[in-house]
Image (cartoon, rainbow, N blue to C red; front, top):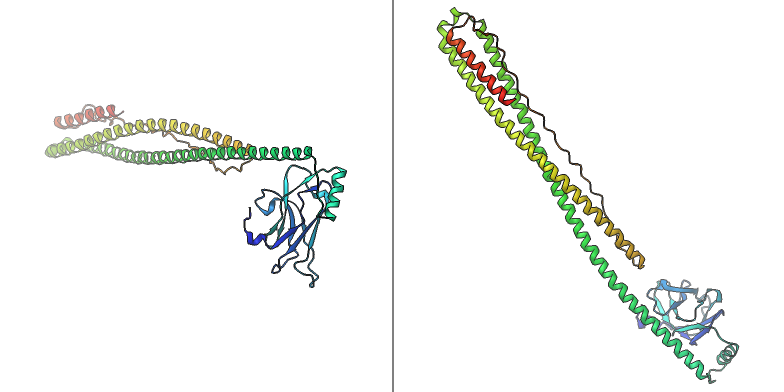
Length: 379
C-alpha cells in the first residue's frame, strides 16, 4: 500500500460520511492543492480498505474537465458514482482514492461502508446533510448491533490473517520440498551423463580391439599363404637340386616355423584379451541397463511428485514456480563380438615326401603337425 504522506496531501476529500446507502448514486467531493496540476487522465476510484496496488479498485470515474482556467484550485470538485457500479455488500469498508495519469495516488479519504437504511435513517441523513450541527440520536439496540458487527468484522479479519499465515507457512514448505526435488533431479541427471560417458569410452576401446584383431587375422592369413608358397617351392625342387642346399632349406623352414609359432601365440593372446573384453562389456551393459531402469523409475517418481506439488499449490491459489522437467531415456546397445575363426590346416600335398630327402621330409612333416595342433587349439 502507498504510504507517502506528501503524495496523499495533494488531494483532500470532503464530507465523507461513515456509510452510504446501498443502490444510491453517491457524490464524492474533493479539493486540489494549490500547486497540484490535474490531468484529464486522472481518476477517482473506490478501493476496498487494505488495497495494495491501484489495480485493486472496485470502480472509478474520470475527473472533471479542466477547461475552465478561471476555476480556483481550492474549489470543490465532484465525482458521481452510479449505483449500478457500487459495491453490493455491507460488511467491507472502502475509501476514495485520487490517482493521477502517472499511476500515483495523490489523496485518499477516510473509510466508509455501504449499508441498507430504513426510511427514518434516510430522512435523518438528508437532514444531516443540510445542517451539520444537528445531533443524531441512536437507540441502544442500534449501538449494540453496530458493536456486534464491528466485533464480527474483527473476528473475520483475525481469521483471515491466521489463514494467510498458514498458507504462507505451507507455501514456504512446498517451495523447500520443490528445491530438494530439483537438487535430486540435477544429481540424477549428472549421474546418468557420467554413465553414458563411461559406456562410450568402453565401446570405443572395444572397437579398437576389434580392429586390432582383424589386423592380426590378416597377418596370420598372409603367413599361411607364405607357408603354402614354401611348400610349393619344395615340391618343385628335385632331389639333385636340393642335395647341396639341405642345410639352408632346413634353416629357412625353421625360421618360418618360429614366425608361425610366434604369430599363433600372439593370436591366442589377442583372442583371450578379446574374450575378456567382451565379457567385461556384456557385464557392464547389464549393469548399465539396470542403472538406466533405476534412473528412469526415479525420474518418473520425481515427475509425479512435482505434478502433485503443482496441483497442491494451484489448489491454494498460489502461483506455482515453473519446473521444467525433461524426459531422460537411454538405449544401450550391446555389442555382439564376432567369433574369431582361424584358418584351417595347411594342405598336405606331399603325403609320403616323394621327391625329397629324408631330412627334408621329416622337417615338412614336423611343420605340418605343429601348425595343425595350434590351429586346432585356436579353433
